[in-house]
Image 1: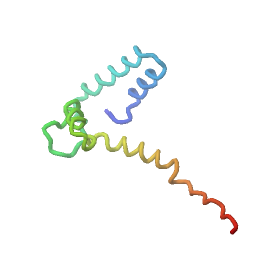
Image 2: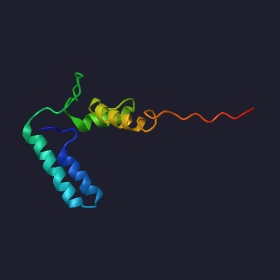
Image 3: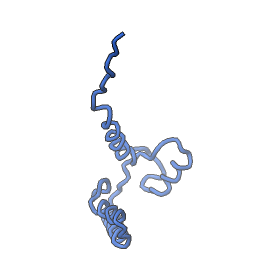
Image 4: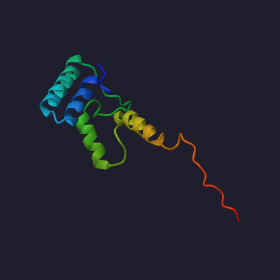
Length: 101
């Protein structure tokens, strides 16, 4: 079971965007049921922490101290930052034409 970039959860988001809340919540409930049923530890954090696998507590703590994101957010955020940076940094800047003196 893959939690990150999950197709069922993406489908739920599509339903939310279309205003189809009941179907979106159905998809989310199914996604969460699959996560729980597989019995696998989905926490990607490598730190030895008493909140390992306790997502709600972990996120609330990080929101509280406002110092950094939980480790499980790093990949998602870095992908989005790379996409945003690609809007400008992968294109050469055009210098302004020189004006004669």
